[in-house]
View: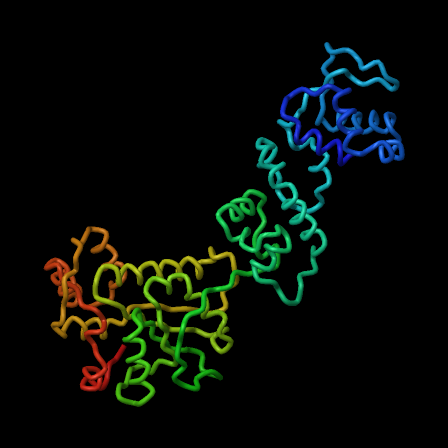
Length: 366
């Protein structure tokens, strides 16, 4: 009968409820047979008394009594303003933090089933993490019925409010995969792995073929070349931690993109994401010690090609700031050349370093 009472109170549209009206509603919900088996009015009065003790219902003294034995108040006020007194709150057994919902009872009633699922999972798995963790979408489906909820802004906000992390739920985010070419057999004892991130598809193909066929010698020789796919790399870079032979090693990456503000900004966002993750703010353990810097020599060669096209947008102070931040180790002449290029409303696509041109160059020190 308690569950029927909770349902009736939760859906009641007004702040006051008549005890006779509530009795009639519960009788209707349960049906005569279930009502009598549950103990009819005596049981109803007992359960209402429990809700009064819990602070969910407050008798309106001026309303008198309902004239039944045992007596109930003729009217009750619904006290939904203090969720801490709700019987549902009392049933939580984990360390889940429900303090936010004390002053936001409407949110509690909206999320209570999800919160109960999270609480149940935390209790059942306390001190016993599974050997194989689920992905966050798998855990989200099991706990909420929606595989995308926990990673949504709404889901992330809910977890933050109850002070529960993905680690607490023994699940992890799956990084968006990127395309890469492994160029060497350096997967064993070597402590440092070298890689080159290429912004655009054609240049990724060109650099891969030149390396595979021995037409271009890069120093240090890259063990892998990654297709950054434009801005996608700022989110997909964590896929590095899914490559088994990289785990536990130091990975030195060089970034090479278009010589325009958009390309430099991609590098800045990537560098910021890496720094945040390695700084312990990513919410997951760090599996790869990553170092990242722009491929200065390739940018120098790109600037020297003389193949430019219109930039299309005026550079801003933010663009110059990002250039100085991203390329602080560039020679002053290179930075000045880039600023002059942009100031003339010009840019250089990385495709200016074509396959045939790179064969002529033959050797580049990253």
